[in-house]
Amino acid sequence: MKFDLLSTIEYGGCSAKLPPGLLSEVLSKLPIATDPRLLVDVNTHDDAGVYKINDETALIFTTDFFPPICSDGYEFGEIAAANSLSDVYAMGGTPLLALNLMMFSQEKIPLDVFGEILKGGQDKVSEAGALIVGGHTIDDHPPKYGLAVVGTVHPDRLITNAGALPNDILVLTKSIGTGALVSGEKNGLCEHEDYRRALKQMKHLNRHGASLADKYGVNSMTDITGFGLAGHAMKMAEASGVSFRMRTQQIPLLPGAYEVYEKGSIPGATFRNLEFTDEHMHCTRGVDYNMKMLVHDAQTSGGLLMTVNPDHAGLLLEELNRLDPGISAVEIGEVLPESPRRIYFE
Amino acid sequence: MKTLDTKGLKCPQPLIMLKEALVDLKMGEEIRVEIDNDTSLKNLVTYLKDQGVEPQVSSAGAVHTLVSLKPEKDLAGSNTAIYCTTDLPTSYVVCIKGERMGDGDPELGSLLMETFVDTLKLQEQLPTHVVLYNGGVKLAMKESPVCSSLSELEELGIRIMLCSTCIDHYGLQFDIGVGMISNMVVITETLAAAGHVITP
Image (spheres, rainbow over the protein chains, first blue to last red):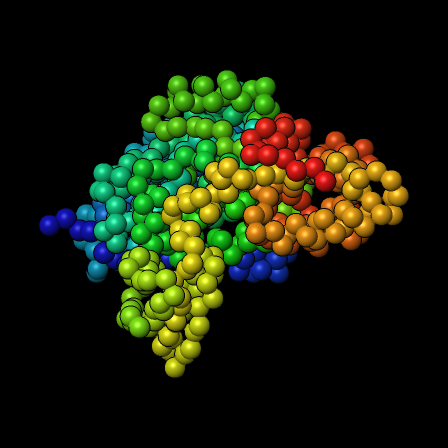
């Protein structure tokens, strides 16, 4: 009998992240490192820190780790690694080196699972063209895994979450609903095939998105993870000093995600994310209730959210979908001048 | 009254059970939920309030009892006509072109416009959008007498749209009290999709 990693975590969909509001409160009390070489610091809630080494190279530095979101160790390793690497891609960079961060109790879980997680991570890092050069393990239960990643980018080609301009088109490169389908799988409320499709999407690297973002001069970019599409869009709009308008009917959903929410299997993280965006968001009466909740669904290894000049949007979308047939990139809205609220859904 | 015992269950199980039970509940009937998970309780309350009902919660130690009516409009999950007002043949957009209503005495025109916006929120059939352009954008400024009425409309899910060119023209960027600044593409799209347009 194969060991089921999902059995190690509290059953239910309340994800592992600290509530976003609480995190901001704690961080606001800490002094912020300032240095002219820091191109991106924690101020703009971006995906990674960026440090300029010289006129040719800036270093991107990031980390992420979390408890199992699937049963199989190898797949968990792949997803956790894809998720960690994504922060480098979201800055328009290329990952170079990674360190494993592992919390694992050999008393509670067979040791071969440990090896499978690391193998999954290693294979994903290799696929990204980067190298794992070590790591650190702590005895802890339930297990957690992820990477600290270093990448590079040319300082002039860095894509932050603070560059969105009014009239830009909003492009999303993966469907949303991974949180819904993990919750659906745990509660027996979705087709196993739909859950498998969600896992496949989570393993998918955001590599092509990053290189095409550079090619088409994307103005601003972030990846969608724990705070959901709405939360990350809000942070991006705030960092850029603009507002976003998004059309929920164009936001792509993973098959089965809507049905999971309809059956009431809405993870606690969704409600927490909703609290975070609350007063900064406006939904028209036309927005379906489950859609309003799904845009707050916490994503694992989600897609890239880009803002691009309307003249380049068509070509960018065409090439994204041609190079990356496994996932679908779509236009979901546009950037507006700074309005009283950050994000507007309709 | 039907009672759901969700004690000992973790989120989202209580919400799954509640949604299932609401389907069979008759209009006007109440349901009771016993619950000992604080997060789930909070989420159930958020969910029910979003559906337009005000649940009653009482607590004895760590166990809470929530009592709620079946939501009147079963908005959840379906793009029902009630929720998606744009589907209704009677859906309309209000287009406000200036600060005042009608020609003639400007003082009277201002008073009429004020009354019009205040009355709008009382309509049984609300507009889907209120589009403000040219001098009309001034109505959405913080100092405007109808700013609060427009905010109330926004809270009801009405999209208030302000013409960005007009905001720039009048130099009002820092005075905006309510509304989504929109370009002509968005405004034209909205007017074109409207069932009909009312211009006071």
